[in-house]
Length: 266
Image (cartoon, rainbow, N blue to C red):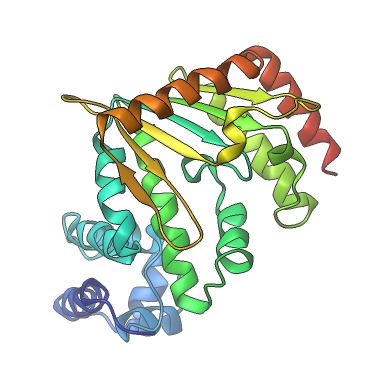
């Protein structure tokens, strides 16, 4: 795996802070409840730092959040280059409207579900896979902010039936979906089973409303994603969104449907 500059910076700062504290790798591992071999692997850029590991190191080494800030930059660096601009838009948006006909949106995925997608659908391996999973989970922080964006998601019913991972992964994922949907600014809708052809079947898309200015959209494909800013194109996607919403069932009925689907994955 090619080393990312921020990964090397994290490793170097972790080593510097550990040595400043007069701790061996083994001693630090004991204080943060991780193995010395993991500490060594992170310091040698062989393992990307996980969130809990980083938080514990920041605390024990009295780093005032330095490692956490480096890790945040590392996660952004880990994103595929063509996706970075969209993540910035996503982070600043006041509202997000997402239609997903095949899989759950990244903002609502569990770690196991995301890992399965990256491994089986995108063919990432090893630490590269772990970096992508960590970056996806980090994006979800926007939903835990004091003022999160309004997130409205429409799913095709087949998303609830498609086995991404084993039944345990699917059950945990759908239960997580229910938990997220109880948040005031998260609204879920499902296009019910048996619905015939409708405009959304042409592909997934997301529309973001920024704090100022016009809406911006995002389209995904087999090669890379693209940001849509042209007024006429965004307007067309907004019309498609309204058509998709019209096919979907209300939020409350959707939650009951997801709950039933979760029980079927046993």
